[in-house]
Image (cartoon, rainbow, N blue to C red; front, side):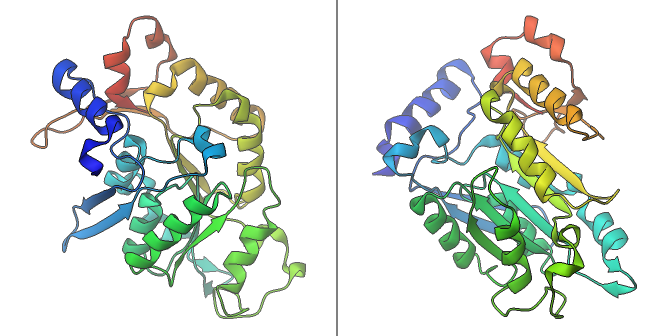
Length: 291
């Protein structure tokens, strides 16, 4: 019985007894349903993947609060504006390309695919058969397989695999319906948007993560990487990533903190990012915010 899972019991106990905001909302094999406040409402239901025993340290067997926050605030990604500005390429309409890194159950990717059927989304995670199988099934069961695909891909790997996934789309043609060749240049194949939720917690992976972003992001003034990180990751760890990204040539366009634990009747508070808060906040405080 999923409800008897010790992880779920512990998480519920922390929230009930100590008013601790959970940082994960599911455990392996359990279902999570997200209802997006559109008219009409859009519902996404995903099953949480499990991993091979050797890959337990990936922490992919949960739907994390950061992924839910990204899905709940998808408007902050400003995809409508991006579609309007970047949807024309040399006078011809082209598809906006979105890449999710560390997708796990794939909640944000699947929601974007439902909201923007003309986008092309590649949802990736570590090449663990259990993760990718569940991710693929989630895509199919939410009926977005026409514009969203699961691809096993480890950070630092050759991004050509991802570009081929975009270009072929099952038909050997470019996503705009025309054939493509490598001579068109790799940049034309890169992604307009990269998203990732709770992927900064391991500082030893920051350098390879930044290299991955560099290799996959389209060289265009409008291209963006959107990241959400639970503050449980730690402020100094997040600051370390920001230094690495800026050192590699990325520019921080906007960074802020957003409250997680709030009632449906009140608007979540937001505030400027401040690494110095690390000296005066406790575990309960950290669990209540995402960056």
